[in-house]
Image 1 (spheres, rainbow, N blue to C red):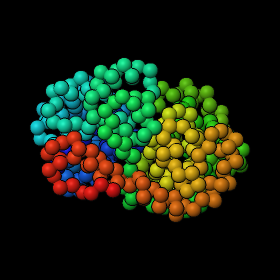
Image 2 (cartoon, one colour):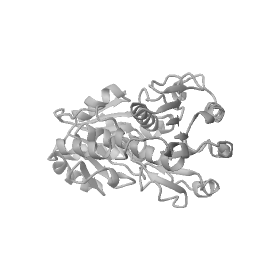
Image 3 (cartoon, rainbow, N blue to C red):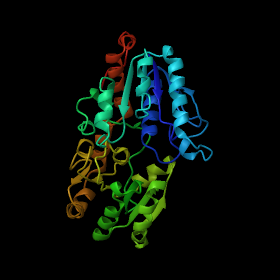
Image 4 (tube, rainbow, N blue to C red):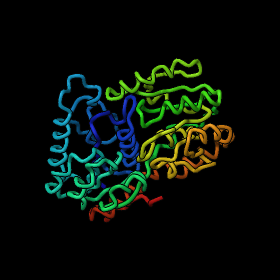
Length: 350
């Protein structure tokens, strides 16, 4: 099958450092190529892929200091897709809503995966304008604010099984990995670690929009049991998660998925998470982690989570969140949407 993957341009595919959507696009693209499909990736020029790469900017926009108007590059990307549409059986968009006004000019079947939160106040009126487009969600919970959309399926994010190995947890610390922002709950993570008397290592980026918040909580990092590592790269992530006793995921927002949870599970590291968004879809309580509703419950659950079997945690990841499973589920949606795809012999859906 001839497949186009259209990625956001904020990060490379895969990202050099932090980045969720582009990482998922990379895993999906590489798995589709491995399954024998003809894949074209529309992404930044510093992306690394075994697919055919089409770029409208040389570097990921977050890292391009010379970029003053990011919207221009996304519009150029959409134009490039329009000009090449006849080359594909299906076009899979991952870059938010920028292509919606151009959709009537695209004769090739499309699928749009929404990767972000959908509970924003402006979204219902906006999305009713484009409600007939075929959409995919990354969790059932994510789609609840917009039930009227033409949802074609939920496809949970996946990782290559070979990407992370099961770790030992011998580092003796709790881990926080992601982004410093109010909704991610790093202050809660510090409170949990201090109350249970375990070291906490924080590997996280600080966006410009969150620097004021970071300054306001900066004194919390002065505690001797708290170590702030800053933003780490993909190569460091496996050891960081694999050596951790557990990952703390004390979020306070409707998380659409939470890729770091399955990254931890792939390392055999259980996840202690607050019950928001898709957490209960991703974490099997008592197997791959513990799901709690308050800070007190989180503190009380630490002993329980440290007793979980890391082998069962890894096995849960392999069963539910591999990139092969993700790719086959997307292939099933492509077949539903594209007459050409339906005539193509596809790998069976897991």
